[in-house]
Structure formats: C-alpha cells, structure tokens
Amino acid sequence: MFNVEKIRQDFPILQRQVNGKPLVYLDNAATSQTPQQVIDVIVDYYSNFNANIHRGVHTLSQEATDKYEAARQTIQKHFNAKHAHEIIMTAGTTHGINLVANGFSSLLKKEDEIIVSALEHHSNIVPWQMLCEKTGATLKVIPMNTAGELIMNDYDRLLTKNTKLVFVNHISNALGTINPIEAIIKKAHQVGAAVLIDGAQACPHIKADMQALNVDFYVASAHKMCGPTGIGFLYGKEAWLHKLPPYQGGGEMIADVTFEKTTYADLPHKFEAGTPNICGGIAFGAAVDYMNNIGFAAIEKYEHELLEYATAELQKIQSLKIYGTAKNKTSVISFNLEGIHPYDIGTLLDKMGIAVRTGHHCAQPIMNFYDIPGTVRASFAFYNTKAEVDALITAVKKAQMMLS
Ligand SMILES: *Cc1c(COP(=O)(O)O)cnc(C)c1O
Image (cartoon, rainbow, N blue to C red; front, side):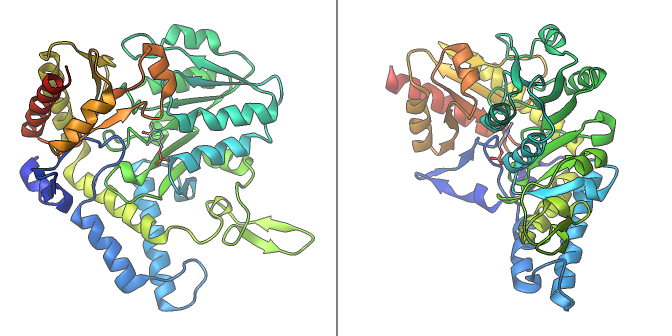
C-alpha cells in the first residue's frame, strides 16, 4: 500500500523549516531529495569500505569493487539492458551526452544530419551544435505545438537517408511532456539513424525498458531519482559501444600501455577512465532499490493524482497561465501570472517555505517559443502531498495580491 506519510519519514530534509515555515519542496525536476536508506549507504561506504576499485588485491578493495559492480547490475536490471557492460557509469546525463557526441565526431561526415527536438534541455542542444561545428553536419529541429507536444508529421519530413542521429528527451523538464519515444525510435531506425534518449526527467517517474524500446543510447542522472549528485549512467547497445572511440584517456580504461601503442580495456571500462565516483555508484544502486521497493506503478498513479489536483486548483487562479498542456504529461507544472515576473513569485514563495524553480529551466528555446522570459515551475515527487499543493495555491494567491 502506498502510504505517503510513511514515505515522508524516510526523508530527513522534509522535516526541516525554511524561513520559519515547514519546507514544501516542489523543485524535484531540478533534483530529488535523498532518503535515509541512501544516506545510510553513503555513510556505510566511507565508514567501512572506502578503497579504490578494480585493482586492489586487498579485502577493502575487493569489497568496494563487488558493491560497485553489484550497483551496475541493479541499474542494468532496472532498465532491462541485455548486458551489465552496456551500462557505463558517468558523472550524470550531461557527461553521458557529451561522451556520445564526442564519439560521433569521428563517425560523421559533412552531408550527415542530426535531429533534436524543440523541447530539449541545453545539455541536449549544445553538445550537438559543437558536434555539427566540428563535422560540418547539419542540425535539424522537430518543432512543437502550443500544448508543448512534438509535431510528429514534421518529424517524418525531417528524416532523410542522411539522418545519422536523433536526440530527444523522454520527458521535458520544462513542461513535463512525455514524448512518444517509441514512435520516434522506430521511425529513426527505418532510415538507419541511431537514437539517444535523454531520460534524466523520466527516470524518477517511469521505468524505461532498454530492450523493449530498442533504443541505441539512453542517459540519466542518479540525483533526479533519490540518488546523489555527480553520478549517472549511459546505456549503449553493445555494438554501438564497440564502434564509438573512448571519450577520455587515463587509468582504468586501458588493457595495455606502451609509448608506441595503447590498447583499450573491454566494455564498460573503455569509457570509464580514472577513479570513478565509487560511493556515488553504490548509492545510485541503493536509490534504484529504494524506488523499486515503493514501486513505479504506485508512484506513477499517485503522481498523476497530484498533477491533476494541482492543475485543477491552479487553473482556478485568475490570470494564471499554464505552459505545457500535453495530453501525456508528468507531474511538472510551468506557469506564469499575468504581468508578474516569475522570479518575483519564486522569491515570495521561498519566504513562505515553498521551493519552486523560476527561469528558463535550461530550455531557452521553449521560452522563446512562448515569447516569455521564463516560468514558475512546480514539480512534484511521490513524497509530495495534496496538503502541499494547497500550500502552494494559498501562497501563489498571496504573492499575486502582494505583487499586483
Ligand atoms: C536535469 C536534466 C538534464 C541534466 O542533467 P545533469 O544531471 O545536470 O547532467 C538533462 N536533461 C533533462 C531533461 C534534465 O531534466
């Protein structure tokens, strides 16, 4: 049974106050909070297992290695990758995208084309622009409609025999739109293009299945799904990971080094140069376990209820406009109050203990599309409550009165 009050007790930070008010944390799309179960794993690691991995003969090193590799398998099982070595540990989503973009810089030719979507995070735009500059390839953009949905007919028209790569996020962090990635992947494969899905915003809400999606690359960050910052993963199909050159050179990623020639280590180590974030990787595994213990079906159902309730209540506020009204969306609500800058609302909400994000949410092209400087974004996790939605509504009304 899903019991939100019991779940909230797992998160020490939810007990604290901000500006004398109980914290209402609605900035989950930027980063999620960390349950005690994951904090305990971090403390346990530095108290009992801290050692470098993959090379020590001593007990601590072997124990740390076992735990780190067990975490890789937890991630593999959760995302249903065929092999554990298809899971590359990264510093996060941005790192994973750059790793793939860098790899493709030696595979692309001038006439090649890359497709991204109008809904992308800057981390899924800038690396491709850099790749196009390096290779001479062309960047094309799938446009969106005013509801914040990708226009799939236009996607069909953009795909050509020159399309080599398609990059789309699974869920938009700015608007909450769930993109039709199954169709996007299928159509890209029909013209022989590879697909990278940015799953950073999806991983706390949806259990993505690598084999069912038949996706080529998928990236996410632990800190959006109850894990620590500075760790994430890149899933790549085995054949693609063999094709891509290594990203960084250094220790851990080599098989044999002489000054004449270096041979690279097998997957996944070929892409994991240097001492990794060992503790972070182990804690990432614990976060995946924690979320699975609650259950993604229950999480999805509960968050959807929160989304519907919050949307209905916000819509009752005069001169409030919600951006992103896709049929298929997750618990992210971007909005503005007529005539008031989002930053001013965010500042007043903080005074009332409510944490929301304001600004362009690393997705300036979306803001340009709506011709606004930014939005106020409230994003809900499975540990938020209807009472917190009510607190948000009361605070927004108060802010509106004070600012108009
Ligand atoms: C958070 C986020 C990113 C960036 O993740 P980092 O952890 O900062 O690398 C990229 N894309 C989307 C959709 C996100 O929500």
